[in-house]
Image (cartoon, rainbow, N blue to C red):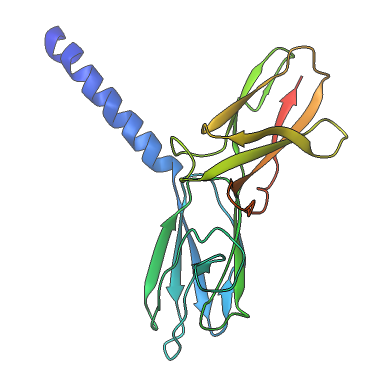
Length: 208
């Protein structure tokens, strides 16, 4: 009996970890109602999926990241649903922090933004704690792109912290740092022309 229990433990542990990972990711719903995205600004977490539904039966729409080739817009062109007839849906998983504007290619006055803050851990700790700032769940940025990270010290404004990052996370070593709240934000940038996403919402860590 003991042999069976010990043999089953790794499988159970793997299953539990898988359940935990799946529970972390969520789906955020955006409805396309008449000629607007609802909500127009959606804040989600790294790894979440945005699920768009065209709720207007008689009108075709798209959800298209700014920068789609040939659109005349400036952006990174990260996703494009193509035409969505009434009732049609489109999903996109957001594995990169930043703020990503988009629009309907058919009715370009229809705009929205998906915002994803960096993931930080731990969220607090004494001076000397090494905080991990996760910028992406991908092993590396998309081809030809890098991450830029900014940090704001307690009571201060955002300043460049790490530029041109190609790893999915950076470390903040708080050794010798004053107590208080430190904020981090990041963006995705294309190296060839400098076009970038907007910066992500601020993620906070506290040095106690």
